[in-house]
Image (cartoon, rainbow, N blue to C red; front, top):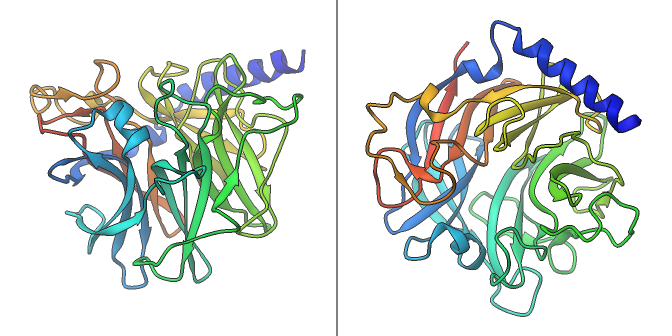
Length: 345
């Protein structure tokens, strides 16, 4: 009964928000390609400002000779790029994180980074796996963390081996024995203290967002036993931020809660239950004309042109830019790239 009531609240919230004149999805303006690396596929690109006003992107990349799938599981590494302006162009700096190649939780596929600054420390949370010869979204995914006093590194793994979250061992938890492990982290320094680590996992029916909380930056992170999004259709790729006094999660909407292939903006007072939702971003065709995308080449995912793995650059407490990859090179290039959209009032 509780789940039914929550679902009804969510449906009413969606219906109400769909009637509004403007949602956050309507504010994004496409600006172009942020990162294009010859010879590499580029995926989720997470931004952060430095003290001089430059923007740094930490992106997943792997050699284009390996298909997007399973290349992201087997050969992905986290590369560092920099630009003196948010719209780029961004230039390669160095490799921040890569798989160990050894018998560790992160032997392969350092992927889907999220970078933040906490005090005078930079932090990257990311995923990795022990064996890429698994199903498309494998149960051996785990979440790790590295920190540094400089965006140029060196990056140090926290704790014993850098891993901060694994699937729960309690059979009563919603994602016990999840077929996709725990993955795609989103990180938030809570305004009241402590640190929230959002993640995607599965309850056996669909992928939802969960939450682990720590008192200290490096953990330990303790998972809550319930989901924080209440959705029947799968969501993933959350990015967490504070906006208008709310805790927000920007996720994909790949299975059509509002727009199949678009994005969702979830908001919450406490960050533990997200039932208020609106369209977070739209399909590529809403931002880029069909004439310009007529030569698009698909490297991964369904035929529709859509964005993936949204990451937000904040400025003065507001979303300023959105960085997104796609399974298509929408202009017909030889690999996937990272795109940038600007928030316009």
